[in-house]
Amino acid sequence: MSRIINVLQKLNRDTEAEVYYVGGFVRDLVRRKKPNNIDMLIRNYPLPNLIKYLSKHGEVNKNASRYNMITFTCNGDIVRISLPYNGSKSSHHFSLKEDARYRDLTINAMYLPIDRRSKKHIIDFYTGLKDIKDRKIRAIGNIKRSIVLSPIRMLRAIAFVSWLNYKIDTNLFYAIKTLSKLLDKAQVDDIRDELVKILLSKKPSKYLKILHSTGLLYLIIPELHMCHGVDQNKQYHKHDVFTHCILACDNTDSDIVLRLSALLHDVGKLQTREEKSNDGNNDDKKVTFYSHEVVSARLAKRILKRLNFDKDIISKVAELAYLHMYNYEPDKWTDAAVRRFIRKAKISNDDLDKLNTFPLFLVRRADRLANGYPHSEVSYRQELFQQRICEIFEQSNAITINDLEIDGATLMSKFNLKEGPTVGHVLNYLLSLVLEDQKLNTIDILIDEASSYLSEALK
Image (cartoon, rainbow, N blue to C red):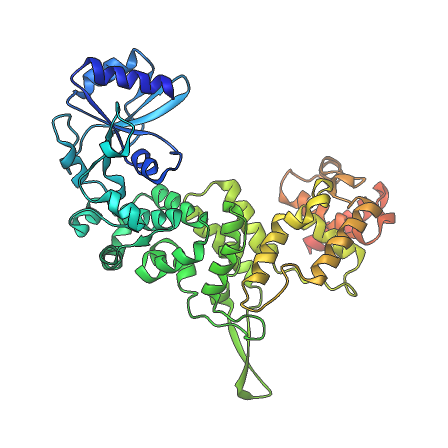
């Protein structure tokens, strides 16, 4: 990064350009934190001249951002550079005060000349220094105008609150509540990125409650928003479904797949909720959520696709939501049942020494800790289950489809099948038989069983 700074210092020294650190760099300098990136603002120097100058020393990308910025890359390091802004366009003629007026938050509207490194040289038009001292997130000037100009600022403000553990200004909170519907105008990718920051904060439940109370959550994840007030059996859950989900999110590691899985693992309970009275007594009702894990997995896929999450993340989250309701009973689960679970959960030899951190078990742990009642983190039954899994691996190394004495190519050749899901269904069926009785794992027996399976399927 020193090479880039040297180039920009030379620009500041040898030309009419005024070069300033701005935004997060200055904010983190005041907070005595290492900045994640460096943003610069350059005034009194036309953009074409700036691009020509920087191109001599590195690579300039004029289309790197839709926020009136260019990026400058040199020796593998990168900075974002903008010209002053006045609400409608950028120009090197505009003053710093004009630029600051249209920034989102007071703590992001401070400037430091590039040839200065002391806090006493910070240029602060809107009490950013005081707000950092008071640990407060405040908008600049007319809050409604600021939000209308860029609706993503509502979500970004709450993301800053979660990341910095600051308080949100009361006026800003109520402005967000009033204007929350404008979030529909924001870019989906920006919404996703700010949501991820909130979910990866130290205590996401605190800020998910703010999203709910402002109405933003209804715009982002209405399926979760509507779980608020959906009560459960008090015998097992002290909280409603919404509160349970956000507390489960708190109780996982700061990993986006785990946080999303915990947050959405019970989102299907709204659709599957039923009440049944015991012995006709309406005062003693039992609440059920049969197959809610299936609905939760389906909704998780829909939600994450809508938010443009990576396909791999979507697949993992949906799978964890679907599998989280396993109910291990030591006296009832046969070895074959444990093997089937191992296969579904995709537990491998490499996982045996760290089953306590296996993603599915971490989601189950979070589910348990979020029910509102005092419990150990891991139940005794879960400990027995993990021991049993290790024992099964020692006994049979957990047979998989690859261990069958028949493969997809043989099935396609023998039964004139085309490559597709049918072949997979047959292999899974044969595997279920072999898991029950390993003596069936011979080519002749498997061909006979495959023939019977296909004959029944065609009826």
